[in-house]
Length: 429
Image (cartoon, rainbow, N blue to C red; front, side):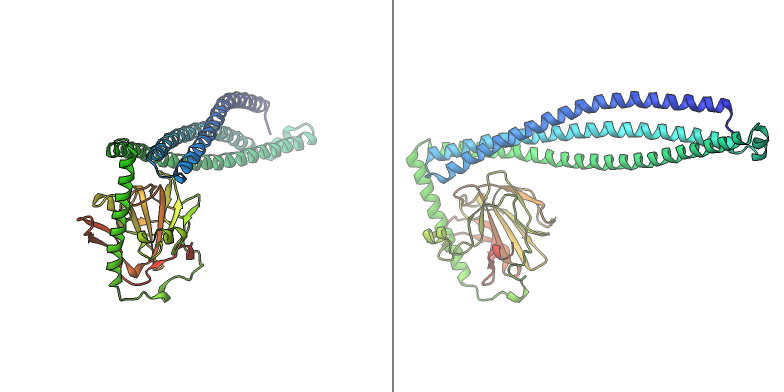
């Protein structure tokens, strides 16, 4: 039987719980609304910066297509510098947005935690009182009632009371699940923030690289068009001579690759190495390769070129192991691959990522599909920023040291060891 004192107590506890819940909800709602407004403002700022970056990208592409003059090259470098600065602003805003979302989640987790504690306390109190009420002998309760209807009325109240407990218990379980979900979401934002922090650091390095490139160009040319033309001519001549050396070396190859060990063409075993795909030159005897036969020594283009502004993230096309990392510019500037990475995959293919501005992997490192390899650039022999993506039969490619007669230095780079080792990337993408 529910005593009058217990009924009064139950009423007070319920009233206090309702009042506290309303106050807590109002406080939480106020803070949550402010955070929501800040997040909306930050997202709007991010969209604005993204538009700014798109405009700089158009300017970079326009100056890349125009005639190769010193003035145009400087314009291109300036536009690249502005884009890189905007990239940094974007990353900073994304970091701030992540911080605000973490703050919002902390608030929600705190609110859920308080709610769970309150529900636990209420349930414990209800269970104690229910236990006391149910411990009374049913015959005593029946004898204490003046009318039998009062007895059954109390039983109905008890059933409703038990229903309230079950409802509170279900709410408690739901709140705990919700809080666990919020904690996982918070961890995801934290991980994203860590990645953005690394990206921010890389972007600052890219800005420095761009400044160094601009300063070196102005120093080497003394801002004179004639000197710039001579610099380009010397670079092309050196590249042609270097390619001739490599061709002579490869002409000595007698062994053939085992084509049966390769994946079937058109199988799509490789993923695109960058998010936005725009191909500027295909594999083999392309129009550019035929028009500049001297640069490829009649062998055609041995990879696929993708348009990629300096700083574009370049990703592994498949899981594998990094078998080589190098920078040919250290030994002979302006020829070959510049900064490059070679990854060996389990399907007898190896992929090459060349002309990078920054390399983000080490030899021997295990790679996952889509993992960051580095950032696009224009190192080595490149008429503009892009990614040179090569695919090879693993058995026919080897990283080694090659002493160039043209440069008079030794450089480390991937060398073909068997015929037909160069494969068309489009057959596997």
